[in-house]
Length: 510
Image (tube, rainbow, N blue to C red):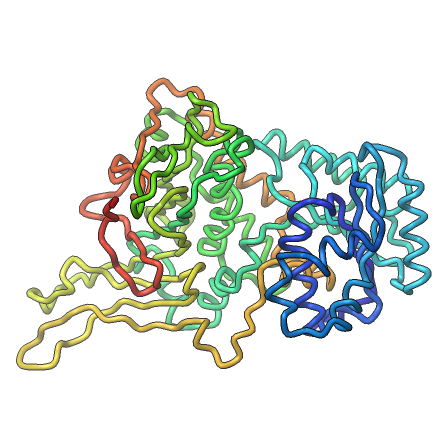
């Protein structure tokens, strides 16, 4: 394991929800597990007027997000953790001169011997990324002559290919690419990382991981909730930008990529970029019509409770055409995946919250047991990312008794069954990686731009296409029936249940 150097974490936008909800709980778990360096401090920075003590009470001592994590900890332990937190009021504007901030950082560095190793976490709107980077640069806080400097930025990373390129250029004006960490919390999930291990450490999978044995690949990302209080943001984003362009294409890249030379960040990210660049970009309207479907959830009744339709949500345009459901069929133009269709869908207001990958293998060319239950049922490798994290293999077995009756059985593994079930939260893993300088699970500039190159034509078609539609679906079902037209032949979407091994039918609205 890499040794974590003494350092300082400077969080911009520290008075916001992300700091209290995700970052501080992740840091507390790392502290409890003795993963933080001996000399480690956190400096919160925002435009709110707070003292060090008020900041500590807000994000540590009185935080509702830490309640479950600190219940077994002594008050001395909690207070010792809280003492690592400090706060600096930036004033009215993030574009003010950073002299005072630079002095505070220097004072804390000298007092706690953090070695001038700084991580700047930008928990702010993307419009402030370049502004903050510029001001840090003007104070010499990007200079690595003494100690390293890293900057972490949250998604959304751009709104389109053009804006992503502009943002990359802006950040790279003040920080080297090696200093920039673009965080995608999906890559911090153990089961996403396990895609690489499943493929490249098991000889029973990698030789079959190609067009000769795989019929098609299906990815589902479903959320049971609606847009909740994010209507204003979501209406300018939509499912394709919010989930597909980043989270789901990251998963696609891990499935598609070729074996890297080694497990280093550079080699893994090189292969991911090549994978994303091999996606067949759809440009003409006929292809886009035949291979994309968008939808919007409608008002309905779920478990006896009325739920709003998307256009009724707070902050949403009553005539909005923003999609809450997106289903895409696409192909990969390389030898390994030639003519293998990928079906990917993401949506809100589905029957359950679930993300999973299904590898559908081809049926044997010659069916020996023609009357078996396995006819028209393929072997499947199901990788459940959330919840009920694990791996499931569906295969044929003989039913005990006379003759050769075959039915499908499950062979499964669940992370919850591990004796040492200490699975890191995504933000814990990603923060620790950044502290140790491991960029494997962070997106590189060319990786982000390659994803946008694939998504941009779809967004443009949905906005300007002459024959594009948006289909309604009742809240609590598996999306519009129109998405079935993407599937070839007799294929059907796998509609997963809350438990990995479930194979439920279509949801019935009560």
